[in-house]
Image (tube, rainbow, N blue to C red; front, side, top):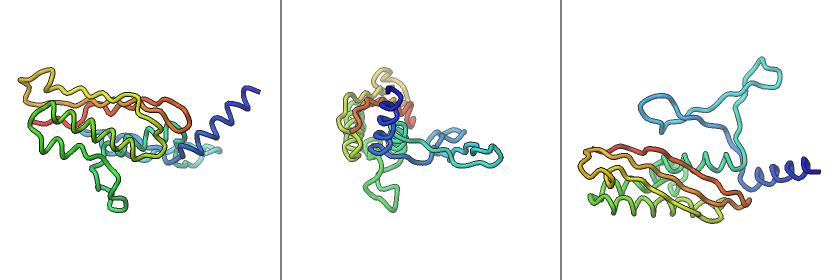
Length: 162
């Protein structure tokens, strides 16, 4: 009985949150680029694309959106993150942080799979170390999905600026 309930929950998550090809960050100086992941097929001799579904798919989609400039996708100009303008236009660190917070919230509100935002935290290295010539912005978000799951998302250290 419990197995059937968990299977139904998994199918509901897949229906509500979707599925897609699994991506992994490329190795190199920037973790912004991503590659498709290959997985062994059933017979083990050939390879297929790995798939991600449900909550993991939504988390991956939002991570891609947060690392794509707004209008960076020519087929969907509403896709992406508007935080780059805050980094380029603002000089006061607290204003940069607040504009980025608003851009994160705006991006999450655009996705119909996000029911509500629980928490958005930004750690700005310049605020904790005012004399630093570079900074890294650590973005952490917790949100609730339409399937009722609570999902954390960590973008990690974003673009250092000099």
